Image (cartoon, rainbow, N blue to C red; front, side, top):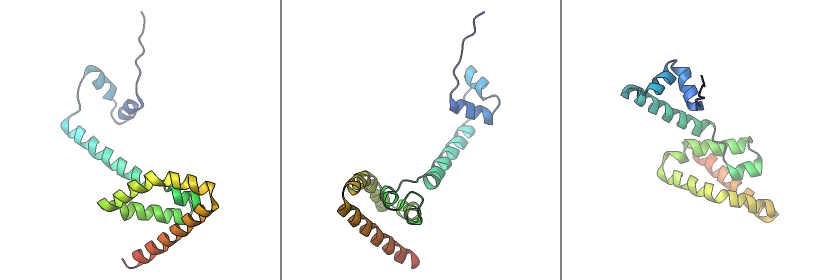
Length: 136
């Protein structure tokens, strides 16, 4: 008798860890209940929000100038996550920043003048944010 091999995705393995019958139910075509589907959607959304805040280490310019784990880089990430991302114009700024910053970092790495200008600009921004957030 010849056995066939069935591939199981990592997502299915994760689901099977939560429900011992998941793979069997999936194989026979049983669909999750509406309640289970809604609970999973809420969990997925909470997971994405947590990943965005906790693991989003992108801050290209500050990481380039100060280092990825420098307190100034962390300060700017915190401001992005807790202030800028809370309104539409802050989110628009973040999108523009992420589209321009890789080019700025590349140019900065090629020119000491651009690096100094960028460093001066970021320092002024940090001081301005610190002043603004002290009064909140």
